[in-house]
Length: 148
Image (cartoon, rainbow, N blue to C red):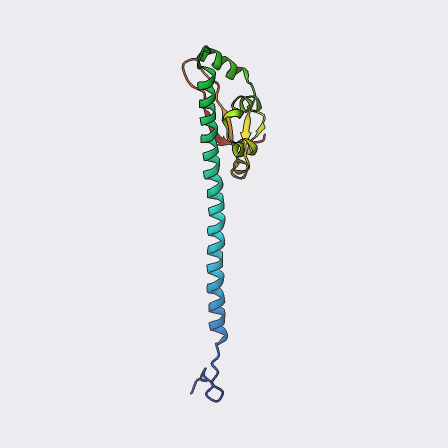
């Protein structure tokens, strides 16, 4: 029994079988799925890195505010008192606003006791300010945000 030749010697054309075409389409589909998954993970990772970076920027602004408030004739106790008197995230953000760059400042919004940015919202995170204890230092924490 002879198998049909894929080469049509009369016209010089070659042809693919249906199986070969299906295999090529399947390989292309698998490659496309891998690329889409890679792009999706990259975007998620980018938002996570940006959220951590914004937390560091806010902490640096808080550090600069503390240094400015406790310098000269002002004391560290007065700075602590002013900081702890700011009860909400919006009030604490208002304290350090002058120490944030315009792009960070424009991207942060206060929600209750939390500060959020677009990247933090995408990650389900928010920033919160700690209270400033007598023997410590104020800090900013990036944590999971729950709207409940």
